[in-house]
Image (cartoon, rainbow, N blue to C red; front, side, top):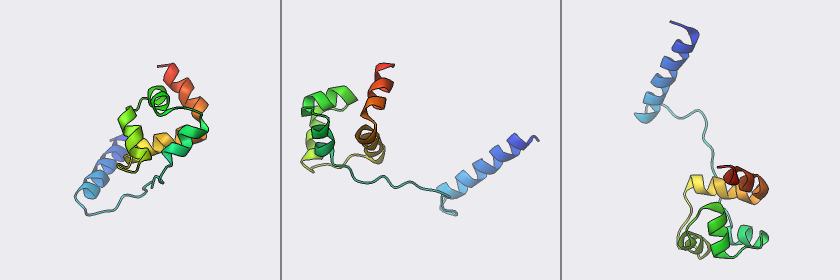
Length: 96
């Protein structure tokens, strides 16, 4: 078996052990909380404009800002990228 094949089999075994609770993931990333209102206001956008620009529903933005709901980890990560690099996000989304 090739080196790649051996690595692939080992990765599958490791994934199974993690899924079965026999091992811990080697690395996890904790996504911090985000202040959606502050991000949106810094960009000078209304809730509806922010939602439209970045692909969120207006109700989700409203719920996050009023702390009725917390964005999922992947959404928090996306919001952090919007916070740090809004122009890059705009470029990426406009190229789609």
